[in-house]
Image 1: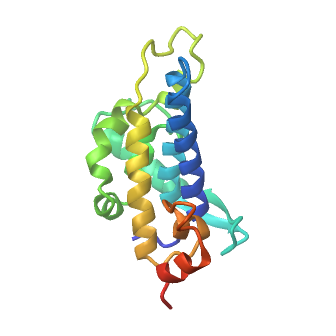
Image 2 (image 1 turned 180 degrees about the vertical axis):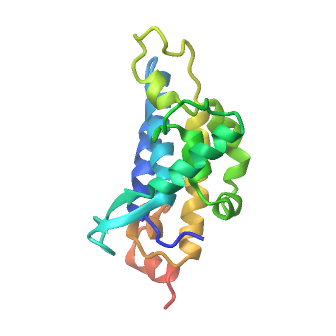
Length: 190
């Protein structure tokens, strides 16, 4: 299992997901929503290969990525024929980041159920953020927004099971009425 929890990264992924959901309610904003969801997905997946490098244990903890995990995932996908043999490691490729997450965690969090979607939208961030470019996709989907939302739900539940006391994790999903000190005591009976 993961050696270190990264709740700030989970919160950041959540914020991009919420922005994407908000953009879906606007006029002709699905393309932008999809890119925001891709950024959120990238952050969420990277949270599982992040290693603290500063402000350890604090709300503003900072991280480096375990490059070896990402390189190993890249090689695994090359052997499987899902990445060209001559292609360099792409730290934005969602499928590579997905495979960098340890298999036991992917299974525990039911991420494996989302692999098809992650593979389908693996390059949204790099290919769709500039819609005026010739190679940009011509269609968009809200699927990644909803997949990301479900994955965040699973991660928050697991972080709570791990005893994470980060305020975002503790209060995630609570309504304003529930967001009271008494509710926090009930969430942590110790």
